[in-house]
Picture 1 (tube, rainbow, N blue to C red):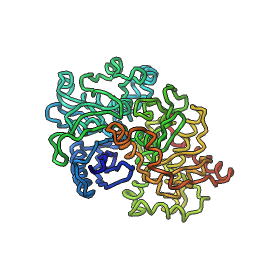
Picture 2: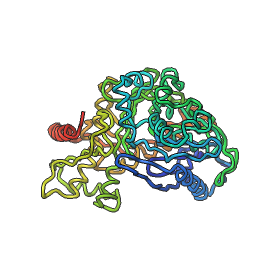
Picture 3: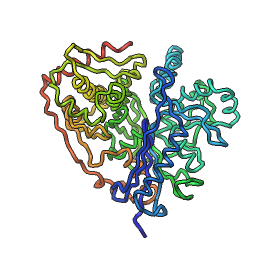
Picture 4: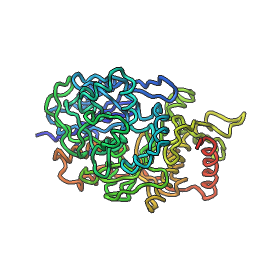
Length: 494
């Protein structure tokens, strides 16, 4: 019998990817496709869920064809996804009734502020571990039900389903309506103590419970494929997991105190807390992640809304370069004495500030300012926003994080990684395969399907490829932090 492989779907904010992962943790083939982003108003972000599904079907076919493998040897499918993005669809037809509202979208910010004024913030935080923010799914569901004709009545009658992207893709793949604990914990509707949908919170947000998916462990059987163009019937889906928790698992941060930072469209620092619930006093959120066996544990998280997206903005909107990789050479060509500071608060500021109304700013401009200086400041901003979150995490947890495990596409940018290590004052470790989000979902699916008999077998699959050490002087670090803090202070509105 041929060696089994795992089909891993990574559905992200700007594109979809499909990987075939071997039992040795190697990438056998992959396929990638961007899909359109829609911005109907300032601060609003939407996706077309049908376009996302169409991209997945094309990519499944391409990845399998490129591998030359027999699809009958696929042991399992694993799915990892952009988390809070919200889809509501017709239960019978599977057709979305409204564009998917993306996690970045700020349209429900005013409603979140109204709930805060009603004194609801502590209730939501104590039950869900989250702050009341438009980032999360619950208020997005309410918006759709309130703004699509007859939607609320249909939902109450059991005709509509809600899901984050994992649930929507699972429904198209298998017909099942399920999610996992990590995605459920991002909705503002899930009680992370009882690990159930919370009736009181559903009532406050006017979300009918019959819309909500069944919740189960990230590493478990969710259903089997049926009626697809690209795959035969009967391939089991053995993992669903939100992208950041998947990266945490893929980095083998299975023990309390271990942490990682993913550099994607946004940046996301997550620390495994084990069985201990800890409510942050420094602007972080508490969420659910996975232990070594894929069962739910608590984690601290700091979410940065704009990470790699700032480089994409410089490429697409400002046209400073035609390839994001060129940002590294531009940044390295500039003296680090530049006082240009870029605060990319395009969609407000996330952790640890949680200022929905903050907006982006470039400070320190003179007539001599160049595109290279602004590019350098943008890369520094990714690292400095990450530093703010890590410092809050250290205070909350009491841990020092002598090394930071990192992943995501931006880890290929050596200037960014060197600067990150410098301002952190600690080592930054990049694995051989930086696609740990994909590996996390693959590992979890493989464990459930029996490809690996124990998490111990995962330890040697993805060794470190590069380690960046802190070489920045204390004086230089203090200078960078002062410039950054002054700039952030100018854009904060609260």
